[in-house]
Amino acid sequence: MAVSKILLYYRFTPIADPEAIRVWQRDLCELLGLRGRILISKDGINGTVGGELKAVKTYWRKMRAYAPFAETDFKWSEGSELDARGLSNDFPRLVVKVRDEIVSFGAPDELRVDEGGVRGGGTHLSPEAVNELVAERADEVVFFDGRNSFEAQIGKFKDAVVPDAATTRDLVTAIDSGQYDHLKDKPIVTYCTGGVRCEVLSSLMISRGFSEVYQIDGGIVRYGERFGNSGLWEGSLYVFDAREALTFGPDAAVIGKCSGCGVPESRMVNCADPNCQSRVVQCADCSHAGAPRCERAHAA
Image 1 (cartoon, rainbow, N blue to C red):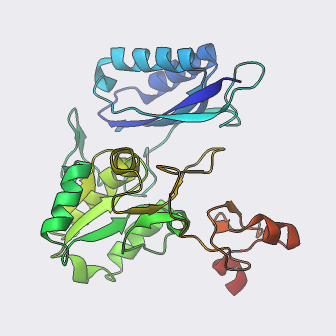
Image 2: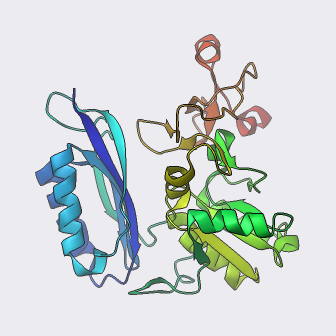
């Protein structure tokens, strides 16, 4: 059976008519039989789409042919088996929406974007430059996780700061609370899956007085592609599609622990509490034995 290809991408650039881009994207993906999730705002586009290789290549070419998106960094990965119709099973449907933000930090008025991307954001570092910075200033560098905190349960950078964040908006609340003010003079390397969340997070941190903020060019995905399991990344990368998680080699560390029995595990399931949107690390045996719940649900 053929397997799908998945594209992960974003591009910050001024968009005069987001609704027109939404219609174009919807029609293009439907024509090509692609599924996934695409968010568009006045500040850019953020998407993950998957499908048959030829269709994904056509989509990539059409995106690159549109001048505002020509410099987009597309990250390719292998998905699951295609169904009998040649459709990707990695996404249940196609969702294309216009939003105030392509990453929901709840701070659309703070973001400044021009044709070159986000203004006032963190300094981009290649994966190699990240390792060089750590080698030179190991006692100072702080990795700062820009994802929802449950994602870090199965994978993160070594000794990273992981804010208690159920949503991306919680990151702003955590920073504004002052609990990380002691890091304002430290070299901080923000990181997230593909880089889009860190574009915004790093700019918000700088505007709040953090003096030396970096972001990994291409996010965890690019770092993992470059160093596999031999770098500073530990464990699996959580992804928001049917694959659930990716590893960067066959011998990836398993840093997660089953919430039920505590055995090493990277499998994640939904919290059983209908009011909770978090994910829980849990082995198959414990899932079969009882309803999985996260710490917040237990506390309630």
